[in-house]
Length: 248
Image: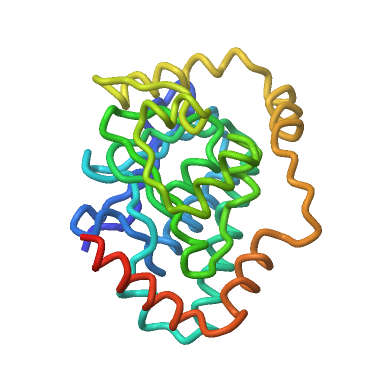
């Protein structure tokens, strides 16, 4: 079977790479396989000379539809806590890369998919893009601090408490995406990546530190893990899924 996440160097001269989610039949929903491959690719890139990284998917229907529901339902509470802790750590690694990152978003960017986009420095979206942050509905805290940093506490609170789906125009208005492009999304993202060559690496690192403002007492991984282990996570998760089915 082909890899769940593909890594390709798409500009040899400027050392620009592309990560592509490659499980269209599950809308690139994250399971242990996708998470492990994403971790491995980020480790590989950490050891290379990289000018920029573009993250995309191979279907217009979804950038990443969140976590793989069936995969998570098979876990014990402890295993679910381990999984989300690993996911939170991976998001931190992505957010702290020594090179600029660009999320190239089409279709659904829900839950962990939206969190992956938020961990990138720039977010370029197609008109089909939409976002949702359902984690708190089943007791999970994942990526919320980063969401607050990007769009502000008031709007972040609304999105995580209501599970509201927002579409691309509103996403741009609140700073969740930086630009909307109706055509040639990847080509436009590649042009942006090439333009980033004008920013010295040490300047980029300083800007990244200034903009991150990650100052909580607990690490993101600890916060995600603790939120799962309080009470019965699987009971909450099943209740949430039942409620979502009733709304359809």
